[in-house]
Length: 188
Ligand SMILES: [Fe+2]
Image (cartoon, rainbow, N blue to C red; front, side, top):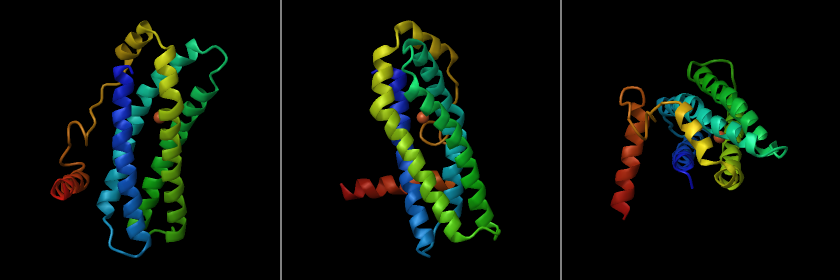
């Protein structure tokens, strides 16, 4: 698999981790147990800064290159491009809803729960579709020249959590991941 697809695959694994964490945090919250609001907001901010500003734009470039090679069979890639736009809007909306609850706004917990569960499901369906169908297809149809063009135009953003950790902005998330790693090591 081309190294850019491998990179996106690594991102997907990290995104999966972030979504699992968000999901378990929401479970705690809706069960009335203690949950960490800073952590939840940071998870959404991570999605807004890295997934929406670096990961999806790189995929978009690759999908556009793929559409040129696929003639009329562009349905899958068009669908994924549309999903990127909807995911960006959904992430923003859900982050604002969390902030609304945090500041004792008017939103009900039930409404937040529905939105949160739908949001996570939407993200997962999208990632699975890319992994199962789009990446293998693109790896087959894109040429060396296509990849060179994508590489020349790709967004240059480091991952602020998994690559170049921003301790100030993502302190709760980084702390949580560090703790989880220590626990995994201790369990080995
Ligand atoms: Fe994507």
